[in-house]
Length: 195
Image (cartoon, rainbow, N blue to C red; front, side, top):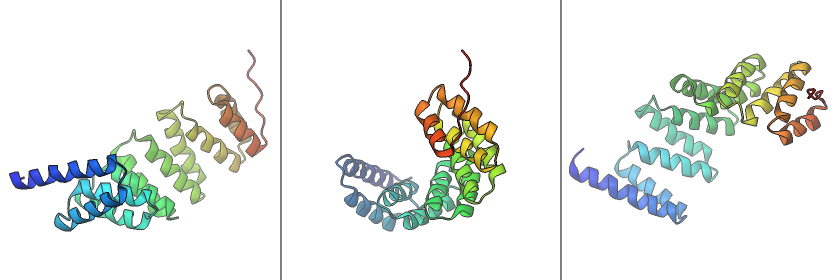
């Protein structure tokens, strides 16, 4: 990268960081849009603008910027995850599944991509595949209640009540509020483990 281009990129990032630090997100969007007019393939600007637009409730526009980013960096697991998340928000479960699957292929330990994949599979009523993805989530993040919660709900949908009860009891050990929520939602009551 020539010196002028490098200095220009550095100056742009400093200005962007300053605007974001003081909470001037609209000004940051304008700066990013101008940057992409000048340098359409600036991956940092594409990712940053997509993030800000998603926060502002513009998931379709944000997704277009991520798709452009992925034409430039097809091995960016985080961008694939973010695209999957936006597609999920837009009700595009099948497209979300594709993006989340790609993210998990690129970064097999990216638990949030496995979680997003599971949610997109649940949305498509592909519960057996969702169970496999949720088991991966709980293996990667065993103390996070989110994967366990969804796994219990899928087991209830599949009429595997004993497995759902087992998860409720497991959650009582470290997330009693989530366990209580599952009991309220499902009507299941897991037997306490004898002490």
